[in-house]
Image (tube, rainbow, N blue to C red):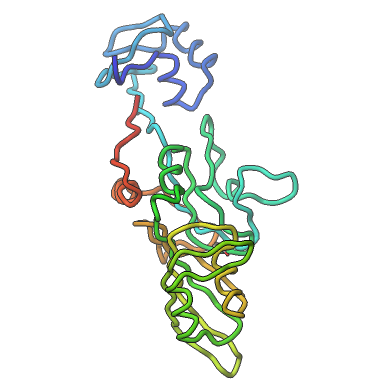
Length: 253
Ligand code: URA
């Protein structure tokens, strides 16, 4: 039956314990379902049924978890690395979760990074077909001009035979004394080093880069680099919609 789960899997997911550990709980008679003692790990748990351990109701586990991280410079966007600190090192140790960052920010880039174990959502967000907006603030060496804005709006060649899709470049500030500019760039794809390559194609260099938005998800101002928080249900829903998914796609089992 849809929405059903085996008792041992259900408990392992909800309690963050191994199947062996939860089987032991069941064997010792500490588990009840809808108030009745159960002794078989294979007992089917239907939606709406309550499960108790030592008489206390077990909270159902969310199928997926979603963290919004303000990635600091110096951490790499990977799940593990023999030498470097990864963004997963910034999160609490997760039991039974296979978390990964959705897309990559360069080691020296800061800003919004979604970390989840929701493969279908990540796939939809990263799909070139979804054209999910990514918005960046950049400090640039050189004076960005309206001609750069025009070239980026038309779709600029970024080397290695690649052309970036038309994107929106806004000049926020220019500082001729120090030969620097601050810009906001909104792109709809995620090619390797894309922003740096787009700015390099204008003959300038990105000195600092921060991602402030991905689809409907905006970097909260109060979240300092290195800090994270769990997505709100509204943010999860809006993010799913921004890549054409209908949420919820992964309810509790
Ligand atoms: N574009 C880049 O060049 N670097 C990033 O980290 C993200 C987008």
